[in-house]
Image (cartoon, rainbow, N blue to C red; front, top):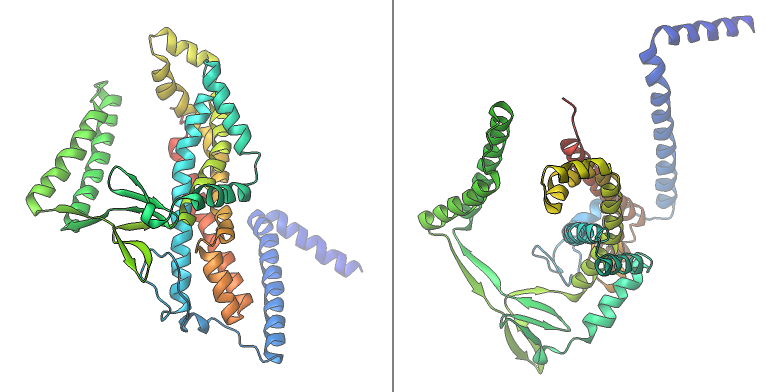
Length: 398
């Protein structure tokens, strides 16, 4: 007993003398323990499936899918593989998530600021919007936009026509397709313009700090954004034409051919995700603005700044450090909530891969694992980007 106690005391002394070992050893043991648990569960599942004659592995991803997908950002048909079907579902998930995040941010900022308005009508409207939508289930909102709004649109032959080029009916919204000539040159021109604007803005900031001279960054940036792409268009013959959708009747069924088709499932899901998430972002914005000391606003007003200038130059830059962390959580929630798309048959990764592909192949463990890791990866990427942006806009003391 004394021998064991002596060894323990020596080990404790060793850890005390080596703080790095003391810090990393428990974490390493935890990782090893988790690997052992995961390895045991994987081996046990594999053995049980093998005993029942059920194949395991990811070779099914190279097999023919034998089903079609209603909406796809890339080419897909039933002769392609399950791996291709996974990619289609992933891109559709990313598409609706990006659309939702962009519009939720814009709408959330608008109503967050509007709720702080001194106009009782404006603040009351913002309060009603926020309190109503955030207290109604997201799934019910998706059903509302899909069944109560979009499914009531007329048939294709009686489509609603907006601006003589947008056609809305029960099958979706049809808009003209952009047909570009020498598009690659235009893209290179835009990339070069953005790069040049970034360099110019950094130079203008350094010049202001060193000499106090202010350059009209916004106006010059807008000028560059117009002049350089225009020069590229004229020099390299970049042109744009529109392919308009046309109504055709085939075997008594009317439908629009050509152009770009936006399916109602995408519209309903994007609407519901954007509006629902925007209510929480609006509260984050309101909390961030209220978190700024009132004295700073009064000091800015005392030097002649207007309310708009105070909000833009003083309040919002400081409020971002409060707004961004909880807003990041809302972006993550929106991305994960997009899995509700299966309720209205929008072909996201859950419906396409964890639904149809799983039922056809029976590879539940593999498909569910891939789907879970996909959402985990998307969430981590969003978190990394938002943490980077949060550090970029954080206030730094000089």
